[in-house]
Length: 577
Image 1 (tube, rainbow, N blue to C red):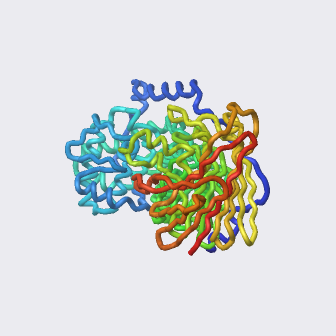
Image 2: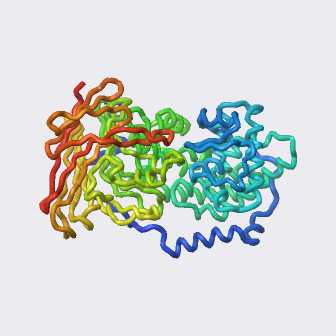
Image 3: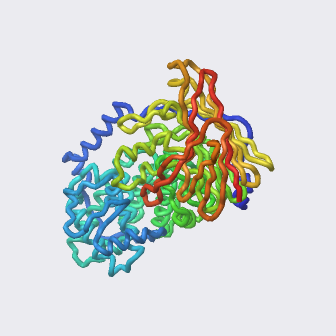
C-alpha cells in the first residue's frame, strides 16, 4: 500500500450508513431555455453591437506565462500546415472559417485558441508566429466583427482571453499595425461581451472559464481595475456553483475537474504577471480540487473514465497538479463528488456511488451508478468504455451515445435498460434518485455496500452491490443483488446482465465449467475471475483511449433473470501471480 493511500486523515472516512439524494432530474425549464435563446439572439442586435464598442488597448499591461505544456503531435501538425484534433484535420492554407463546419470538439479547440499552447510547445517564436498569425487572421475575418453563437460563447471567450494573453508573443509580434489593432480590438470587444454574458454559461467549468476571462481582462487590459473587482465577484460565484464541498465538480466528470484546475492555474499566472496573489477563494478551491482529482485516479495516477471523460494519462494529470503547487493525498471518500476509492498494495478500485449529475448542470451525463474500475499497478483490469465527450470526431453518433449507457459501464443492467433514462435529445431523465452507502475499513479489508433505486419505478427492484478489497490487494469480492421494492409492472422473470469491461490488452480465457475466466494482464500478472451464480460469457467490447480512439477489448458478462423475489450473484477476482 502506497503512502498516499495509507493516511486516512485527508478524507476523514466515516464508517457506517449514509444516503445520497440528487436534487432533481430535470434540465432547464422551457422558460429558461427561451430566456437563453433570447439572450443569444440579442447578440445580433445593434444594441449589443453598441455595447461592444469602445477604446481598444494599444498594448497589454503584462504577458503571463502559460505554465502547462501542450500536445506535441498537434503542435508538429500545426508547423506542418494542418490543425488537427481527435481525428479531425484541416489544412491551414485555404481554410475559410466562415464556411467551416467542424465537429463540436474541434470547434472548441479552434475557437478557444488552445492550439496556441500546442504550437508554442514545439517551436520558437520565429517558427510559430507565422502559423499563429495566419490562423488569427482567418479567425478575425470570420468572427472578429460578427458575433456568432459558435465562436462567441462566453466560455470560449474566457478561454480565448487566457490563451491570447499568455501567448501574445505569437499573435502580436507582427509589425503590421493594422493587424495588431484588429487583434487588440477583438480582445477588448470579447471582454465587453463576457462582462454581460459570463453568467449565462452552463454552470460548472464553462461558467468558471468565462469568469476567468473577465478577471484576466481586468488584470491585463489597461484601465481594468473595476472589471477585475467585478470579475472576481463573478468568479467566486461561479466556483461556488461548480464545485461540491469535497472538491468534486458538479458534472461529476474527472476530466472536467482537471480542466477546471488548469483554468485556475492559468489565471494565477495572470495575477503573477501583475505581481499579485490569486484571491483566497480561488486558492482554496484548488486545495479542495486536487485531492478529489487524485481520488479519481488509478494506481498510475491517470484518470479513470467517468461521466463521458477519457482516461487522461498520468503525465498530463501530474503536470497540472504540479503547476497548482498543491501537494496532498487522494480523497478516498467523496460525499458529494460520489467516487469511493479503495486501495491496497498497488491495487486501486474506484466506485461510482452517487446518482448521475442533474441535467441542468451537464450535457452528456452517463447512467453509471454503482459501476467500478479496477487497476493493478500500471495495468487497468476492469474499466468503463468511457469517452462519450472525448471520443474521436468520426465515430458514429449512435456509438458515442451508446458510451453513456449503463451497459457501457462495469455494473448490472436490468432488462437491457439504463439505470437512469437517457432521452433522445441526449438529456438525462428519471432513474437513480437515491444511493445508500455503507463503508467499513479494517486491517484485513475495505468494504463498500451501496444500492440505488434506478430500477424501482420501472421494474420493481433495487440494485445493491457489495465490493470488498482485501488488505493485501490480491482479491476483490463482489455481490450483486436485486431486491424487490415497489410495484412490478410486468409479470414473470426480468433478465439482467452484469458486465465487467476489460482494460486494454487484458486477455480473457473462459474456464471449461463456464463459471470463470483467466485474465492475462499486460506486464505478466494473472487474475482469475469466478462466479457462483449464472453462466459467464466472454464477449467483445471497446474502450476509448486517451486520444479518443476506440480500442477493441473484451468483456465478461454474467447473464441471468430475477423472479419476483429478486436475485443474487456472487463473484470474485483473485490475483494468481
